[in-house]
Amino acid sequence: MFLELSTAAGALLGAVLLSTLVNPKALSLLFGLTLLVSLVPILVRIGEEFPRNVQNDGLATRLRLNGTYFDKRLGLDVTYNVTGIPVALGVMFVAGAISGLLGIGAGVLKVLAHEMVMKVPTKVSTATSNFMIGVTAASAAGVYIRRGLVLPFLVVPVAVAVLIGAFLGTMLMERMSNARIRQVFAAALAIIGLQMILRGLGLEI
Amino acid sequence: MSDENQYRLSVPDLSSWILRGGVVLSVLVMLCGMTISFLHNGMNIERIERTPFDNRLSLIWDGVLHGSGKAIVEVGVYMLVLTPILRVFVSMILFVFSERDWLYALITFAVLLLTLAGLLLLH
Image 1: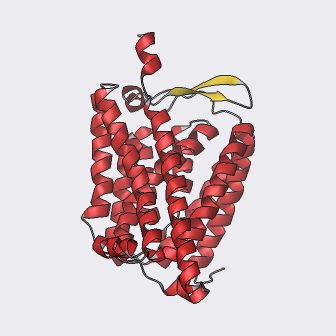
Image 2 (image 1 turned 90 degrees about the vertical axis):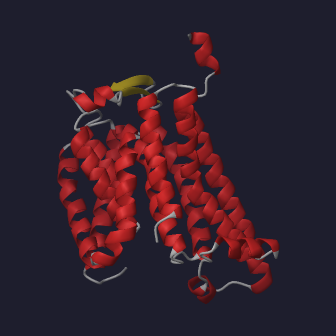
Image 3 (image 1 turned 60 degrees about the vertical axis):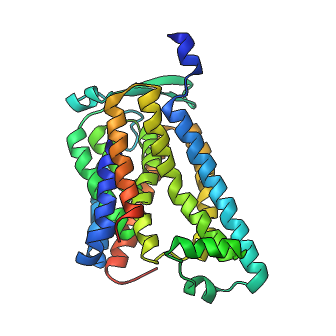
């Protein structure tokens, strides 16, 4: 919830201000490059099941961000700590701004912040990001609806497909290992990164 | 304390039910609207690409009263956008009255203000 503060502010800024000031193509290019570069640290730790030696930082302790989740696959409770909150706040703001502008990016950048900066287990990071995306999207979507930029009949098939995919994905995620989820994430990162670079260069696929 | 905890709604549990319920409900409403529109006018790519969103709530309301499929789809879209905002609102209420966690109540309130600003104020 605390991080949502930052990401919602970013989404508003992205949808309202940046969309008139910044060239979306240049931003796509930048975003794609960022994703491909961040693939490197993910690949280095790709087989790792849990982050090691994580200490809570001051803010994480005050906000009680550390916690425990039940890992269905391992059949046991996993306790985790959280670190790097100030940096994560900055990344969340950027994530919000980019998603408000490009309609994509919130989830990917949030998972990256959770994984790389805050060092929480992969399942916690994907689940939390899913929880937060709604807030980011709603902040920006309101602006777009009022500008008449949303196509109502296009929303329906997209929403239905996303809903089915999300339910299936969640069921799969509970049964998969953290290491396997990270492999899937790395693949998604590579694909989205390439696609964004192509879009930035004006080659839409 | 354990007695009290058993009957207390936790913020994450309730949030997850609101999100799931809201998303499923809004998609069902959208599908109804799409079906009605399809039965009346047929559907093709051009229509999907050319039909704009009514940006005034009164227009949408009039459409719903006249049984317009497009207006019903738009109601569904609004429900979808409002779902996470409702979730933030309910979390805030729970933080105040059930958990008595003032720090998180304040943070949630700020998030709520930002999301509502996107919906109501800014163009």
